Length: 500
Ligand SMILES: Cc1cc2nc3c(=O)[nH]c(=O)nc-3n(C[C@H](O)[C@H](O)[C@H](O)COP(=O)(O)OP(=O)(O)OC[C@H]3O[C@@H](n4cnc5c(N)ncnc54)[C@H](O)[C@@H]3O)c2cc1C
Image 1: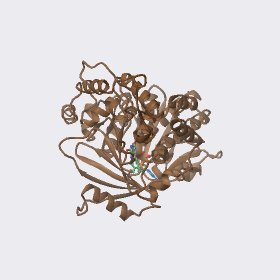
Image 2 (image 1 turned 30 degrees about the vertical axis):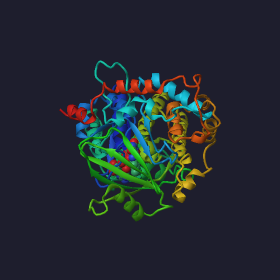
Image 3 (image 1 turned 90 degrees about the vertical axis):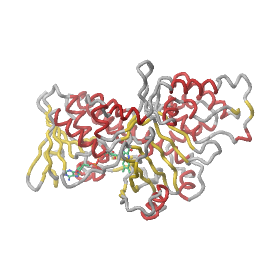
Image 4 (image 1 turned 60 degrees about the vertical axis):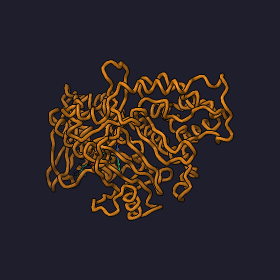
């Protein structure tokens, strides 16, 4: 292979994650990686919750938790708690837990109970008692087990995205990535329409073979210069704005993200070691900036506070091609699904890995871009559908926003079938398998969502379970989860330990 030059435009989390993954993966090849970043255009600076995938990323680039977590004010995340999305009695909140190996024993009981309850038999159908991560979150424990507990636990993190960016930039430079601080004003194209060079600061040219567009929502290369179209998701995901406000951290640090449904959207509450990051994601069609800020301030007890709020706009959807000519879009430039399940950095990682795989498979040419585009487009649609399901099954009636979401028929055929199978009392895992979508969100996630919202027959329609239906003793399951939980330290204690 002759030498290759890969130019990444943008030094946000997406740009630096891409730089690290590419430089580390191809450290034995003659590939030069450069990151061009404007010193004047800031990063979006939100994006503070991850999925367990982020641990795999840090492990891959060989940065231990003890090194990066204290520097980024990071905390552990066992999952996401959804509060007030459902008004159904007993189901006003639930947790979407990250998977843990001990769940292999308790999850089948949850699957069984939720199946039987859909048929009108009164068994415990709420997901919370069945999952270890939920127990850890409820008791503010860290997902780091004692050595004597030989089971795998998946977990994510919360972190300060600005500090994380700086740490990743430092690491990328160690991998030999060149850091160019310059503002891109134009591009020079080859006769076939591919990009030949970025033109910075009036005259400087940065040439390359492949250009990775990590320029954020502006999507400077992909959407502006190459004119690749955008598939908006606004018909089924209404939120297009956010307002962000930090609050002080208390003594006990939570080990989960909390998402609270509000009048025109929902607010996130993300615990870091030094503060709590809060933001209200809402639809500007239903409420204006001031209303949103006031509602969030009131909820946080900040009505009289001078803490400044940041307002953001979001463009929700995906580019029609994630890899076009010699340009690959990664991060906000490729698209965005609102942050309800904190999936954006997960998608960044998947996109970079897919690019690495396809570029290599195509012998370091663009031959396999069709495969990459198909994989990314399907991933976006599958994640979108899982997020849309939250809105579709909500039972709030307090504003038009929630009523319009619940009545919105602009949903994909795939999601329509998933919801139908659930309400008809059929086997949901079989349907996910049939559609081949459980690789994006596994069956347990879909079960937690639908059961967590209480999508069951009404309480008065349920009959008591007889012995043949009641095959799992819920008290034994609670006790099993509790005893597994004894192997885990308090979150604050673990954080203090890992910062030494
Ligand atoms: C409200 C909200 C909440 C979110 N919450 C989460 C979450 O909990 N979890 C999660 O995983 N994700 C979340 N995200 C998404 C996450 O913030 C982004 O995916 C992530 O920060 C990556 O952003 P980026 O690097 O693509 O873009 P940016 O951070 O915007 O970076 C763009 C970069 O491009 C550079 N640039 C732009 N134009 C030029 C130019 N002309 N010349 C040179 N450089 C240029 C800028 O200087 C900057 O370095 C959230 C997003 C929003 C909007």
